[in-house]
Length: 487
Image 1: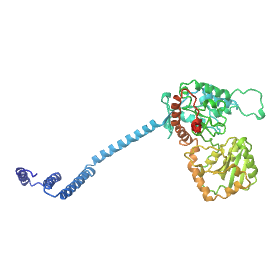
Image 2: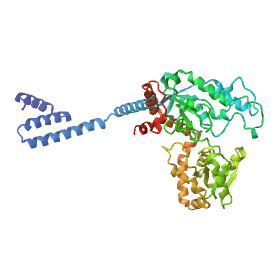
Image 3: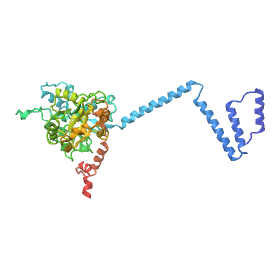
Image 4: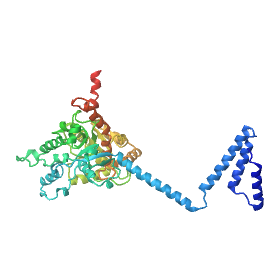
């Protein structure tokens, strides 16, 4: 609808008097008035086209006004606002990540189960008593050091626990899991082995008594009673650790090196975590390559073992006369470790036969040496298999085939240098998972594995509440016995 004539005339007279050039805004408004006043008289198609052109023109004008301002301070202000919002979102994301981390409560055990074990180990080897500050005692190096590294990780400040999937809480009411820092593997070897059972005197330290005392202490704790230990984590990485009381702690998440000494109703991949041995030789820091690896196959370790480890003696007989193969009998010692480091760092393949149980520390020595493991152990369980594809970093040989003359060396000699390089590249990629000293290495991966057990733990605890106090065994879930019985 057109404006009244008197308004047009008034505008016209003012314009004539001033002779001003219309502003951009005035032109836009005037154009829109003309456009919309004429739209009523135009066909629908022309009206739509005109309206579309007007909208495009208006949006272009707005875009120029906001995104190309003449005042630079406007841009600076918007930049500051964006950065502030970004910083706030980063802080929020960090807080959210911490809030979603699995919360772990570290039991403050009596010293007899932690530093007391270290002190007794020292005393048994000629050390002096230290009563003032036992926490300054140094944990001795050995292949089952996971218990020490996990304990040390939890007592560190959170700022130094880079990338950890768990957070330590001081209030047990907030905890998802409870960590029991008993040095069970060290406790097992406090009393040095006496050749031939020499020495009739009773040892001053008893691992069996300490195991019993620990479980009695735990069974008196409120949070153990609440879940029957299902949300508790205990390290038993030596195959014989906790052997006397394993039936009383079988509900816990057990951190083990393998399942060679536990029954199916005591341990399984479903509720427990396989952890790597702590490697005892120096990590190889060089590049991949075959130029300086002149030995085809290397092994240095105890020739005579029990149970599944008896295969070692057979392999010795087959391999000890083979060209470019080094296979030696050697006990744990500093000199043996130096020789093993040199041998693994200069070999293409490293033999890993079963020990007294399916696994042994030399597998992890080989990995950090970029020496391709040759695994001859039919029932071995390996750590972190949901993360690591061991077929890419190791050669697996069935025991029955490995003990056939010429089979093993022929198989290894047929591997091309290009394939060896591919194995080495993969080993270099994953060796971080086997470095306990790495801030984001083995320990963080163990915590990730433990964290994944939390849904099952909650399932078992809640399930047990409705079963009228009936004892629940993990085996009904691990082996699906409930379903089998109903078929």
